[in-house]
Length: 248
Ligand SMILES: CC(=O)[C@@H](O)[C@H](O)COP(=O)(O)O
Ligand SMILES: NCC(=O)COP(=O)(O)O
Image (cartoon, rainbow, N blue to C red; front, side, top):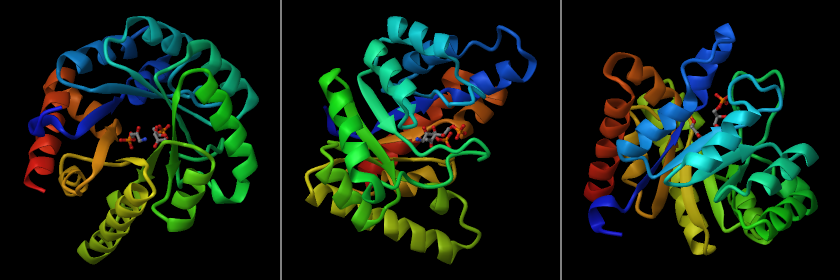
């Protein structure tokens, strides 16, 4: 990997499917979005198959598994169904996320410390299936240490509180928590990704944190794509974070 592309962009295409599901149509097709994203420089494609199937559907994941040129980052709750599904699909990456039916979006990180045995068993099953497992967690030392203990090689730090900050002070505080989380993860030998709620106006500061491996970004890219097209929206985000990482 060259210095110019040392940070990776995973493009989350869930909300292309959100638009499709709103009318029960066949369009817009998240698979087309994924292929366009790849052409525009995405390093991977992220999809979250929610238990309530509010956006991505099982078939989307199956088709993506066949056609992606990069790699799939499959986000899932820790349930027996999802574990079995992932074992069939065998995505390159599986990210375990917390999930509740009523939430608007993923509101916090997975409580790994509070359920180590259950998460360790899931990590083991997925690893045996050939998936690299990541855990979507808050930037807290106890969660990062638990992630290491359960055998996950990768963590993704939840950036939602930073993205939703109402003041510059709050944003700076949340950013410094993420920075500390990155250092902690790296010190424990983990690969550290980050994502959630990142946008064209706030992703650079996270990308500039030394050691961040990949950012997963979806909602903002899909929204921007309405006005500039999907490829352009992905290319703009990729250029933004690569430049920030190189400056940082
Ligand atoms: C786990 C995560 O942060 C994203 O995948 C997010 O869940 C996108 O989907 P939702 O907007 O449905 O939460
Ligand atoms: N894991 C975070 C992700 O995939 C993208 O989240 P968002 O940018 O749609 O909020």
